[in-house]
Length: 489
Image (cartoon, rainbow, N blue to C red):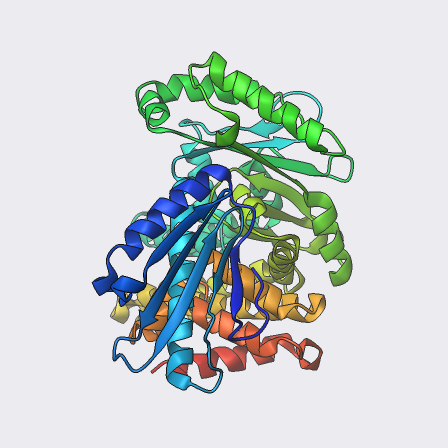
């Protein structure tokens, strides 16, 4: 996604979408635009023109108070582009309408593409020789999905889970709970990189740097077939796909071979697809992470690819030499190289700042304080003490997430790159926060280690071009979090 100016007349919404997504998106947009009263579209202005694999929509949009109007053109092909022919840079009412309309279009496009993923099978294929170095969907990997949920983010979830566990254990072993919990957390901290590496089968290295994501769009009959035979079929597919290898070079012929192999495996298991339903995207993941690590002056962390459609990444480890980063298949599909580099930079910012150690120390203080330092207060507050403890951990997590954003922006010199990647990753939440008067405030109180997405994006956009002026990433992040929280009221 690229914007030439805050109010560019032409904006690219998405690039390189699949042929099947193009046709589905056209129907989705046409259905949305067919309700002009709801969407403030002038009924007589609506046009739809199809030619050479591309569909153009055009209409006249009015603001809710009818004080401004805007001509909109939306082209949908492999690239989705919105243009606004009569934008007046001095007309504030029209600029507000422009912003709202562009946000609506982005929200529609990305909502459709995210929903389309739910009916898509993903195969992550590595470049390691031998078996079990690739990963296919399976109903038997529920435990791995649970692990991804627990260990995602900045490891705050692990420490929050330990808080809940401590409450349960206290009923049985009393004061010994604090020793047991801190001991378990310390073991987790030491072996966090090993745990992370078990979140996927594809683990790029300097000798085997590639990862390919093969996406197969499932038709209605395929979904029904999987619903009836999924457990057995997916297990067999997983076994066969586990032996596929993406060769170095990743040229068109190599990708065609991988695509043909996946289609043959599916066919043998009763799932019939066409070439148009299958897309393959190959990334040199190790080279990308190595490039970012070099800018941070850190060794390359261990890398694992998680077979999840959600665009996300996480890093952990007690030190740079014992760190690991997990990147999801969704990130490899959705993000450009620059955007993915900025996300990896954010994760290495956690490693550089020793954030897992900071969270461990915070949790240790919460535990020891409750049982040894302010025990009477703990007894007085009861369960409410855990609400406060959760709040403390989330507050620390929000500052650490902001600091990781800042580290990525300063080291890579690309605050806007991270802002655009966050816009893609959190577009739904961003839209709700932006147009809900209470959303900005409530999201500061969410039990989430991340600050509100609008805050992160606006802050990064403000940093763009002056990254080198940041002198102390932690103090700047702490200050901005405090200011951001109080300005949300």
